[in-house]
Length: 318
Image (tube, rainbow, N blue to C red):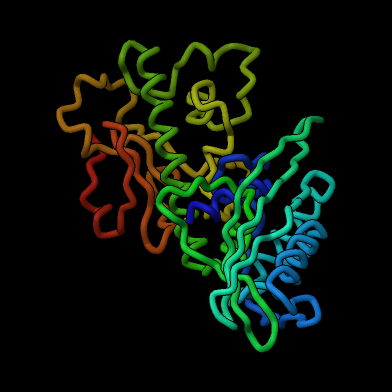
């Protein structure tokens, strides 16, 4: 799942909210999978397959990339990402040195290859170099790349070929898990922002009656009060948006402050680990966007996915 978050961040999507630049997520893609067929003339050897994969990746053709990966399907979601990927066509370039291929047997091989990703950012070129370890399998006379699990010590950056391979075979559950993880990361940052805000407000929680919000030059005046109050501390509108939130309304925030804590001192809370500080939803109504669960940030700063049954036991008042 980490590599899915990294690859999507690289492509400028809001999947994991790390390097995304857009404030509103794309429409939720329907889960429609189309079979893809390999092109044997492009994959007669493991080296052919690796070069063909890089060539098609640089051409922003994820459909033909998927044709070179065992078990990959060109889903509607990947098609949507391909379109956004193409918009960055002049900003991304993968290069590889000659692969070193070791035959395991007549139908399996592994290869090491140095991958260089050049990314144009704000007029400067960023260079990421990765030593890729790729697995390949002969399928119906053609060699295909094989997705492997993320190793515990692997540095996931979104720049390696193996990470793109994993991205192409990701299941819907993987996407859902990644969205839930991003939502929890957002919530953690918002809780930290609320604590910083409380420190600047004599140790009291609250988002109303802040002097900064009354200033005529308040640059966040078009945002909901909660976002206005916390934005100076988190400095990213993306954090206020859950990637699983499909609401297309003007209010781009997915989270809300528990107004029962307005003006309450942190020292007054006897059981902060049990009291809701920030919740996923609006106007006191929780949104269960993650397989029947919602993200809750508690007054001690910890974050948890909560089921509907567990939500009934949440404490909202100090």
